[in-house]
Amino acid sequence: MKLKQKAARIQGILERLYPDPPVPLDHSDPYTLLVAVLLSAQCTDKRVNATTPALFGLARTPAAMAELSVETIREIIKPCGLSPAKSKAIQGLSRILVERHHSQVPRTFEELEALPGVGHKTAGVVLSHAFDQAAFPVDTHIHRLAERWGLSDGRSVEKTERDLKALFAMETWKRLHLQMIYFGREHCPALRHDPSACPICAFAAKAALRVKSARVKPTRAPARTPKTK
Ligand code: SF4
View 1 (cartoon, rainbow, N blue to C red):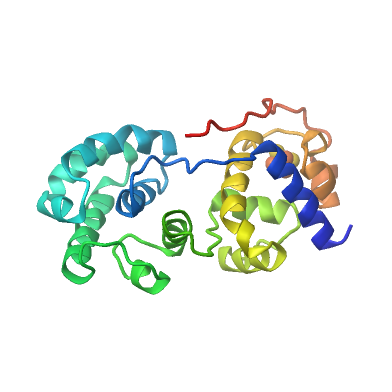
View 2: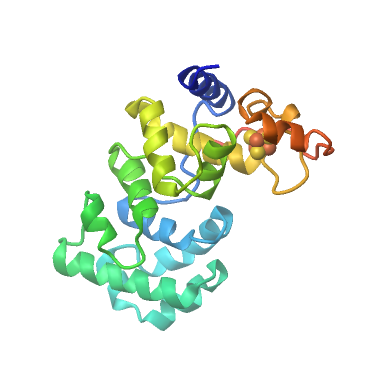
């Protein structure tokens, strides 16, 4: 199967499974999305969503957040992990937004990535979901799936992003980013599963992966479609 054909078939399956994928992090504007994405590093979205109401209850604008002490922020966000670094970043970026960006979240990769705690993936999520800009944020789920499905060689996250952008139409990047994340979370256990029982790997995975895993008993749970907010 040609690569473009394979990509189209994968996209069709993802469309059927996740026709309307919601952004999994609760937010009300670009600023609260930015903070939530920052908090989600090495943390589940569920835990972030359980933590942000307390944080945004105290401060939901850059100006209000910049007034909080790092210690106060750290105490609230402790359940998300990495709280010393994340609290400093949240307060630091809030100050910068007030001082240099009129309390607005900037709309370019360059400006976003200059903020403390904001990397390329975080910037891409904000640009894509808050501002509808063309971006294809690649997280660990997407990176791993693109390699398993033979859509990229897995050499680096940057390479995966370039390969996916070349394979899929720009107007679908935003949806695909979410669809791949949901698929990875709901279908791909870390260990012991059978690619031949998977709706995508059954035809898309490299032959070596299918043969290697053929002896392993499937443990995959049935597919679920995410709730729409
Ligand atoms: S075979 Fe495994 S890794 Fe590949 S997509 Fe299916 S569940 Fe994920």
